[in-house]
Length: 225
Ligand code: ADP
Ligand code: ADP
Ligand code: ZN
Image 1 (spheres, helix red, strand yellow):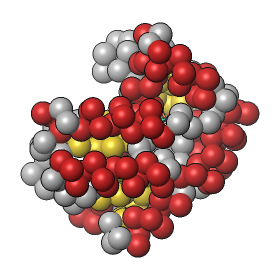
Image 2 (cartoon, rainbow, N blue to C red):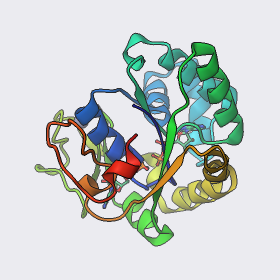
Image 3 (cartoon, helix red, strand yellow):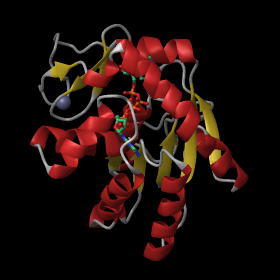
Image 4 (cartoon, rainbow, N blue to C red):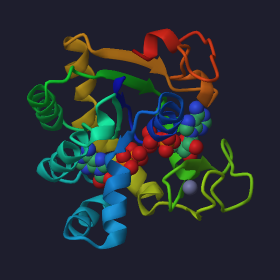
C-alpha cells in the first residue's frame, strides 16, 4: 500500500496514518514529525526548519525532499508507506514522482481528507500532541485516558507552538496557496480519492481487507487501494 494523505492542517492525516500503520504494518512517513524531532535534537536541519515552522511557513523544498528520499530507501518502505504531510507543493510532488521512478516503484494514491475550515480551526486549537511518539489527541474530541499523558507510550502531551490561533490561520492560508493545487495535480493523473474527513475516526480511511478488525464501512473500499 502506497498512500499519500492529503488535506489541510487538522484534517486528520496524522490520526488516520497512525490507524492505518497499525492495521497494515506499513510505516508512516510524517515530515512534520521528522522535522519536529530535528528541532528537538538541535541539528542544523532542525535549526533551519524551526525558523519556518514557528511562523507557519513551509520549510524549503530541497530540505524536505532530501528527508523523504532518505526515508523511502530504507528497507521497511519496500512493502509500502503512508506519506503524511508530504508532498506539500507541486515541486515536492514532482520530485517525489522522479524519486519513485528512480526507485522503480509504482506511484502512490492520494487520499484527500475533506474537512470544513470551521472544523479545522476547532481541531487544531484543541489538539494536544505526544512529545515522544507524535500521537495526536484532542481536549474534547479525543481526550487521553489520563490527563496530559499519551495512551500509547505514556509520553507527555503538549500543545504545539504552531497550534496557536494566529499561526493556525497562517498555515491554512499557506495550505490554500501552496498545497491545495496538489488535489488537481493528482486528480488529473487519475491518482486521487476524496473522502469526507468528518465523523468517527474509524469510519474515515479505514480498511475492509484482511485487517485484524475486518471492519466494513461505506467509504473504505474506495479509499484504501
Ligand atoms: P499539520 O499536521 O498540522 O498539517 P505538520 O506536522 O505536517 O502539520 O507540519 C508542521 C510544519 O512542519 C509545517 O507548518 C511546515 O512548517 C513543516 N513541514 C512539514 N511537512 C512539510 C513539507 N512537506 N514541506 C515543507 N514544510 C513542511
Ligand atoms: P493533521 O495531521 O491533518 O494535522 P491530526 O490527525 O493531527 O491532523 O488531527 C488534528 C486534530 O483533530 C487532533 O487533535 C485529532 O485528535 C483531531 N481529530 C482527528 N480526526 C478527527 C475526527 N474524525 N473527528 C474529530 N477530531 C478529530
Ligand atoms: Zn506517545
